[in-house]
Amino acid sequence: MSESENKSWQQEPFVVDVKRGDTKCYCMCGLTKTPPFCDGSHKDTHDVPMVVHYDKDETVYVCGCRKSANLPFCDGTHKK
Image (tube, rainbow, N blue to C red; front, side):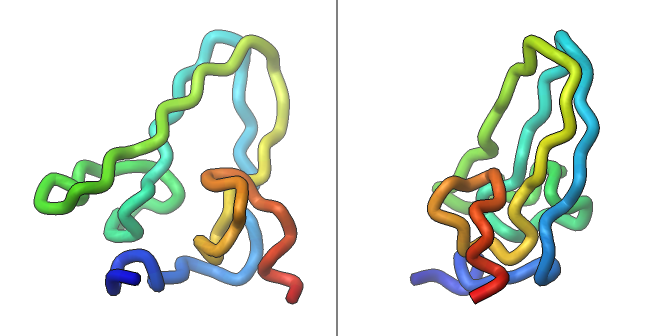
């Protein structure tokens, strides 16, 4: 596992309110300075952001510990 794969931002999920029609780019490399969103820091890696399009207003829980089996979303792994 690379160093960026081990990087944790925080030990709880990010709470993100999204609106119908929103598109969010979530960091997958762990190097962003604006977690959980991509800031382009992956350019020197093989990782790419996960782009998610939303078709309804909702609150999503984005993984902060980076250990979820359902990245970019939280699956409760941080509680273990």
